[in-house]
Amino acid sequence: MMGVVFILMALPLIGSVGIVLLTAHRRDMLVLDRRMGSRVVAVAPVVRQRKALVTMPQRIEPLLAQAQIEPTPQLVAILCGVLALSFALSLAIGGLVLGLIAVAAEAALVIMYVDARARRRRDGLIDALPFYLDAVRQLMSIGNSLPQALQRALPTAADTIQSFLGPATRRIELGAPVADSMQQLADRLAIAEVAMLAAAIRVNIRFGGPMTSILNNLAQIVRERLRIKRELASATAEVKISTQLLVALPLLLTAFLLTSNQAYRDFFFNEPRGHRMAFVAAVLQGLGITLMMRMKRMSF
Image (cartoon, rainbow, N blue to C red; front, side, top):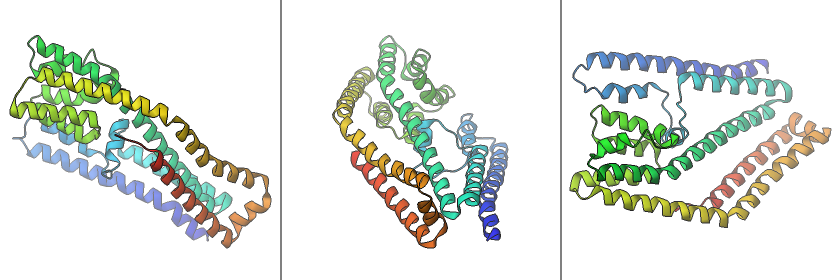
């Protein structure tokens, strides 16, 4: 049994060390490519240097980009180490079931934190975007070009606008095409309002037309979407609170029964049948939480 415990403790640590080594090797290869690619334009090293980070799944990348969290090898190694340590302690205290529950709970907390941070920063970006578009439109109406207006309106914009659009404007300042830079930002963030801005710029550069009127219409569309979103949030507030109560009630009841009754703890932590029932209950609870979250999610 102790051999299995040590193996389970070592697997996350070995995985984190492997991630660090592979990322360091990839960084060395990128440095070698930059030295050999002498004909690459000046903006290429800035864009390619970002790929020295840990490769994440495609569905997680937009969430991390919205939360502005860079998955560096050090961060991934620290997270794996914390999970391994908590699993080992829970395994020594309450067995395999408690270790798996502890790891699952910590992973859920990390995901909830990233999602909440991404939602907060995304909402801040969308709230400030109409004012930034108005500033860009005013600068263009007095004779500035689109790249100049995007850069000059940035210092007076909100902090979220500066943090999200700052890299794109710096690429434009270094000579990158405006449409490509904004499209790259829209693909990375996966936010509908930023995608509309990138599409408007790309269409205007390709087919022409008054960009000031396009920006004005886009700012009005974003404001209308914000108004509808606030009305929708106020109309569905009761449903969201009911969902949160239904999700938290089984967890609180389980915690109360386990802490107040020794027989429950002995059954679920020490007997094989209790292990199976605890695993089935955790899976069903997770499926129920996922289903209720998807049911209350409304987008337009």
